[in-house]
Amino acid sequence: MPFLKKKDAVAFDIGSNSIKLVQMSQTKKGWELTKLGMAELPPEAIVDGSIIDSMTVTNTLKDLIREHGVKVKDAVSSLTGHSVIIKKVSFPAMSEEELADSIQWEAEQYIPFPITDVNIDFQILGADTEGRGQMDVMLVAVKKDVINDYTNVIKEAGLNPVVIDVDSFALENMMEINYPVAPGENIAMVNIGASITSISVIFAGLTIFTRSIPMGGNQFTEEIQRQLNVSFKDAEEMKTGKKAEGETPIAPAVESIASNLTFEVKRSLDFFLGGSQGSYVSKIYLSGGGSLAPGLKDLMQEKTTIPAEVVNPFKNVEANPKHFDKEKLKDSAPFFAVAVGLATRRFADR
Image (cartoon, rainbow, N blue to C red; front, side, top):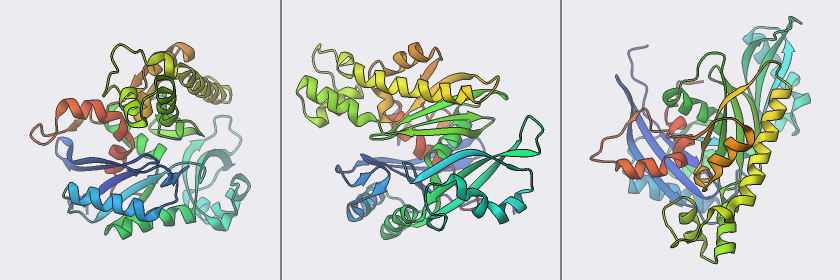
């Protein structure tokens, strides 16, 4: 019934370096931030989106829940990495119900895993533009064992996992509330996590292209650590601008990594544009901790010739200044892009 308020849920972006917690409430004016937290994970706890040390992840979740006084029981999280397959494919035109009935065998040719090992979902993007009686479908397949690993650590932490999403779709939601895109416009999201960078193109609020590359913020940090002979922790703080090391310029230290990453982004967008007649990308939005690497945004603009911006996922989110420091929120904002998108999800959502 529409007048019944959907229950709040707490969102966890469980990454390879840290877990980000966000809880938001929907008000008459929009979204309001109620909880925010981040806790580091040790190396090798999560590798390429797969949980290796479930006990450590569970305990970190418990610590975050306790530290931030989380009272709700519903939780949402998301997945990324090579266990997640997202492909835009063409199927014969049919209804959503018909596709739901036949998706298992229709999808088999596109999935590099045994079809019995994955959960499959889809979104119909629309009829093809060439009138061939086909329709474009966004196909999503996620390995069941990876989903189970994530739901299990959330259950072990005492919560009820109601939604397990995909990072790129969470970013769609974040963009929807903060950066509305004009009809007919393609924008690119480049989410730079610790070890994986996800590149996606969003059109009319829907992801129509994705690619993951095994590069991320850790490579920037390790290069600063190596060249400037500082600890990993200090290098991380220097990368994100939390700590300056005298007059030592850190941009040259990360230039080669930034160039490699920018090349991969450009290559991905060129591939997308090559297969989409008449398409263009109007803007690149950067998110994730790696987006704060010095000089990266400017290099991205220069090499792709597309305007770039580091996102603020709290741009249109109310945050009570008594509970959240405005400057701290702004400085850490790109880390929370996925978590903010997840925090808009509720149990009743598809």
